[in-house]
Amino acid sequence: MCDCIFLQQFLFVLLAHFFKILQHIDINVLRYINHNRLTFFDAFFIFTTDVATLICYSSAVILLLAAYAKRDFLLRRKSWLLLVGLILNSAIADIVKNIIRRPRPFTTYPFIHNLVNVHTSSFPSGHTAEVFMLAISVSILFSKHKWAMFFAWCWAVIIAYSRMDLGVHYPSDILGSIIISCIVAFGFINLMTKLGFLQQPIYVDWKRANK
Image 1 (cartoon, rainbow, N blue to C red):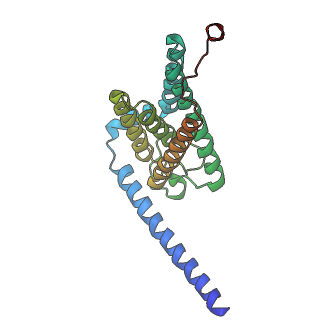
Image 2 (image 1 turned 135 degrees about the vertical axis):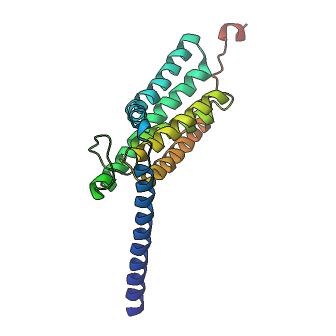
Image 3 (image 1 turned 120 degrees about the vertical axis):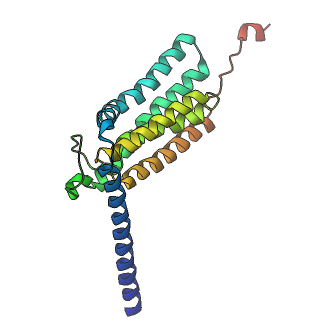
């Protein structure tokens, strides 16, 4: 019994030390990015982070409207998957954010320069979750359109970096968002594909069939 208690205490101390090391790496990487940023790009990164959500959702909506205008069944279904996937991923990220409630880095470490006003928790990064959900979904659903994939991934990398550059997220916040987006994107799209959501319905002309 004593051996079990000792082992539990040892593992707890070891785990606490491990997370302390990770936090040390986390803040040092963020400090390097934040303190060595090119201030010339501050306005650009503030602008991109402000419009990130708008661009993600408007891209899906515009694609959906175009699909209805063209009466393209497959494009319409893929656009719905893209839009619903973005909403689902954002909801999951918000739930995780409200459960973990990690303080923002500039709150815990005053030497981090905060360039934008934020009042929510830090982990995970909602902006990063959105843009990577878009990039991963586009790569799965529209793999033949290399130009769309290229722009989606460039946009995702820019937004993810901007969140650290502006001092509002740790690198682990970014990594956590990417992992969540990967799981949701692959899981949701694969599930809907297996359920036949992307299959063209077969219409039977019963008048001809009965002749």
